[in-house]
Length: 302
Image 1: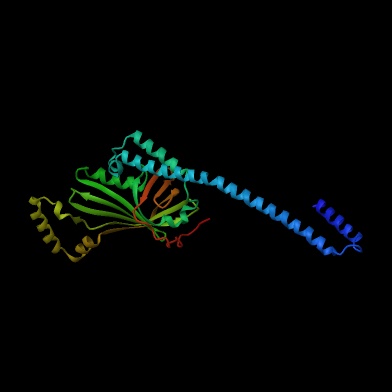
Image 2 (image 1 turned 30 degrees about the horizontal axis):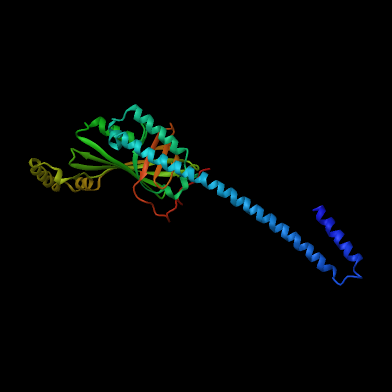
């Protein structure tokens, strides 16, 4: 800058000394000097822009490599579920310790690549999710334990578990089959409260046992007569009893049970949460949530 000022003073002095014998006004010389300054400034801007573009170009392979690593980790986790026997093996306790540690290792690998920094308020959280993996102290394992401790596996089976998250509330459904002929659903509704970018509180509001549905084509021929008699008997029951059977048995919980959990991974296909003991639950999306639905009703307790 000092050199530039010195040049300007020297040129102006020279112009003033030769003004009487020169036909060119001083403004011409000053304008020429200013143009050179603009040219240098423009050159510096071009160099800076080129450096930024070069740095961005060098960052693209890194971002691409991380995304490829994340997709590979997701695929590896799903393959580990399948190799372990899937949901059926999980609920019946047929998974070995080696398979459990293998799945947990892949879960932690995927969590490290979480692409959603604030999952509790992300629109990706809403939608229908299916349980793929849960530990020994989670609601999913408790439901399975209650069922299989009271009934033999040949009599009852837990075919699937899913949960719908929408507008700060959840509706978890366990689909149960009795003798492969009678389908029943156990439903648990709860309220969600955001307690931070990763942490949430879940308060259970109501449990419901839906009216069972008979799969007629699965009923053996020798039992279809008994099924018809049972249907006729149900039609003659008192109205309050019929209403209960038709609408299901509701058990109000009134928020007396609650739990805290942390969302450790979330994208458009996979959700991973951990409870207060660090036990993971892994869910996969069943339906694509609406892109316009954003969680606005959740409380944020800072």
